[in-house]
Image (cartoon, rainbow, N blue to C red; front, side, top):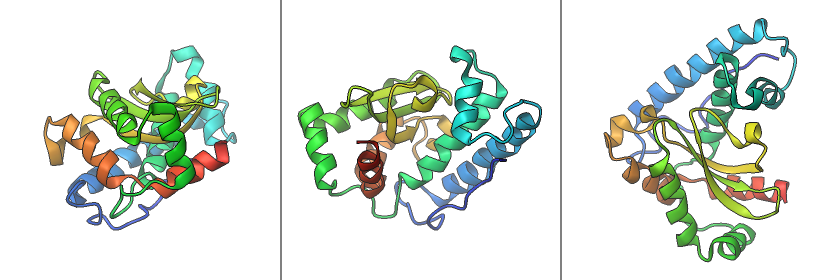
Length: 202
């Protein structure tokens, strides 16, 4: 299979004021598209053509000694999910079972949000912060550098991820990464999608 750029699941201007149409046009149409185009070129000569995207990510991770194919494949997966982890008028109420589990494992929803924002803010340089259902059945917040994701590291199932590469927020927030991650977790998250992934993984 080859990688394909999906359409955004909403209009470019529908996440404003938390994420602008300009950010989405650059982020989706330029950055994500580049991962698809470059990933497909590298896939041709990799010996992994015909595998699923997840298999390509695992097969090219190489114990963390990542190269171009991994970087582009992982970033493609990360972004396909990222667009679906947000929605217009996001944030708000968290579906019951997921909310209960967040409270059980973090003490409160606010404690989870604080941990998630902290992970995003303290990720040095480019990367992602994640809410993961660990292999031990507990929810945990993690962070990874560059395009590395929980599929590659095998540390559980990614239920939510926030892109903290500068291109994700610089147009709207300049260097105020904390404001961006807070806006993401409070006003952009599509909690129904997160709950769906949680139910499937449980």
